[in-house]
Length: 358
Image (cartoon, rainbow, N blue to C red):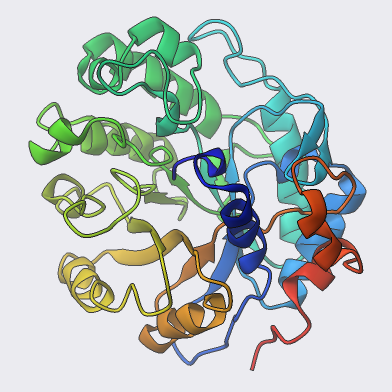
């Protein structure tokens, strides 16, 4: 997704808090629901526990995490500690502090009967043609390769990214005593990347001719082997909307190493997904793949529950945009709108007591 800073403040807040009123509903199908939480590993253990326990109490089965650093300060209303990026200064030189932090989060996730999807890198950090920065900033891959197009087509860049993925997948969990690639009891799957090729539409139009998507999936599968941990696409091309429909291009649809086709999107009102879900579901099922609405939100106030009910009616698993703030420990960027939530006590109040398994 584009960073929330691209939207006016009031929409940022609506996006952030709209997901608080989740509509998780138990169904006879194998559907499930959850939330995206890209910086949960950077908040205190106490608040992580409160937040994840609240998600679990409301029926959430999955939480999507990011292998990303954090800064010390106030992140979307939550106090975060500084954590360096996995490759903070140089491609191929690793600092495992973020993996250690995420592993501790996984311990809490597991204790609450949930699983995680892990997104290993953000495609929004890679610059579109003519720009010096990606939509969410610029990291070491941005600095080394200069553009999104080069990153996805360069043989050297593919090798560098495969090395990163191998480092993550082979990370030996201090809490579970196994490599992450084998932790099917707590890790549902790994994305190829968060929103790969979001800044490389021409490559998507050409069906990823350089085979970045399936090539990376195949190398990941060699490490994961038969552990049961899945490989998800991570929302190819970013948000799905009219005339920008790249989440399920043929390259991922027919890639045998990919298990989950991840759909991302942000709609103006409930029902915006209705034209897409039946065909997406049928397309995925036709190739024996799972479909998941991995990241989504709605702009209009009061529209979250109806859209969640829409997904539930189709039996499609979903994970909403991050529930911000995870804990109301700081006020930065929230302004007067925070007063509407002044009685919130951690994530449970934010999620809403009406959100129950039924």
